[in-house]
Length: 302
Image: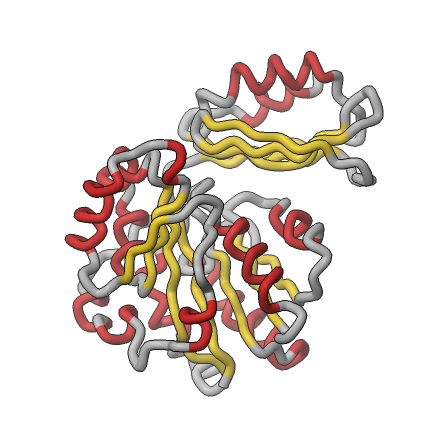
């Protein structure tokens, strides 16, 4: 049976960064399968991982959380077919940041999967600068922590009361190992090689099954696509308006000067990187409470 690793964490916490590190360390010696689950009807993280230059197999599941009833059945079928076709040595599921994974046991107990994979470890990434603010407001963040074997307190360089975060994590899940990190720079060897006999999600399955999964989150997703180059001034005006209105934006922008950018925002943190050899079109995913797809697209592409 194939070990299955679940990676959870709220929007922008660092899940894709963690997977890039795993690929850098293990893709040359293991055949890795990655399932990327995006709540929006598009996925730009796969492009990010492919830019690592490492070899891996990928299955992209968009338009909702794989733990939601609306996708669960089709996801089980897709995952079973992916395993049969690719036969990976390890599988990592990067769950949507809006996922409530409390029902992970139901997914892995499906007859189509329970003789093919087993839950080896669950890693939850939390944003040190936002966890204490967001966790009381989002049941799904609480549940992500509750089922974790390892909780990575990421972005410790950006502030946050680390001791208070550690205490809250231990209140929610006294069984998890808690590690501090920047850019998800942690030691993976022990996690991948010294697997617990019973992961927390299995050991605590009775207590966890009593928890009510969160419903579909009241967060809107917007996808902006265009083949037209965008002026840098136009992009700056767009970001100035919408960074404060969104939890998360990520994607690729083709600029009118011939260059291209990979951009990411997480709450009000913004970063960008120039891409010298990008040949695709502009594609941005945005997520927030009160954002209008029509207004965002109109401002981005006047």
